[in-house]
Length: 292
Image 1 (cartoon, helix red, strand yellow):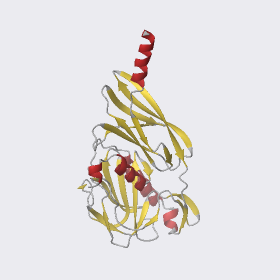
Image 2: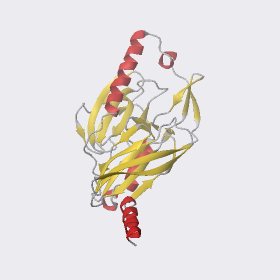
Image 3: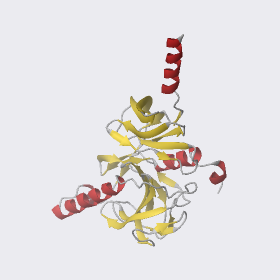
Image 4: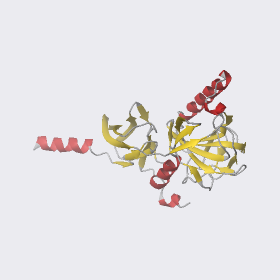
């Protein structure tokens, strides 16, 4: 009887963790949300996914739970991957493992014709510029601000037709050069582009590939990006409100014509921006805030 009681107490302590996984079957390039109930005697430390330690944050909209975002790379193939939650319970380190099923998102292909100088740059100074801009951006994307700037749901950066979805395989001038890292919106020259949510502007720059670029840090590792702009209305380190004017659309960088390229990053990984914002809007924000 004593042994049975001790066994029951052990099982209760190990399996007391309340975990909700939104998207345990997820396509490549998408994001999974893990929600963890706030419980007495439990301190959450980190989530291990492959070789990464993913931070756990208190849900800014619901103080009774924690959350973490698991970004799935576009290059991940269909498979099962283990996610390990590390936490302290009553002074002891414990682990809980869950499985994610990665599915093929079955993205489309599209052919694009642009200047050959934009497809395979040869000049050393251009290659140096591209490398510098890439390293600068990756340093930003891998910076996880400890606080959240979000107070309400995300909105679209403009109301317009989507002309190219995230993940579409890109064939430039006959050669496969990767995939579409964001969502393109149809936009004539000079169309207003607004912030999809509150945050701090961390980059305002004209870049080789993305042209006129604005990047917003929404806190806790969430970034949105706005490419190919013709004019800026914000400056670096400026705090912006949701819906605030960032600038005007254009055709700068590697493009075939004027449009807005809208993208997102989580923990440095490019993810589908519309799936990410929908995930956050529908699963973290309270009903009251969702209607604001």
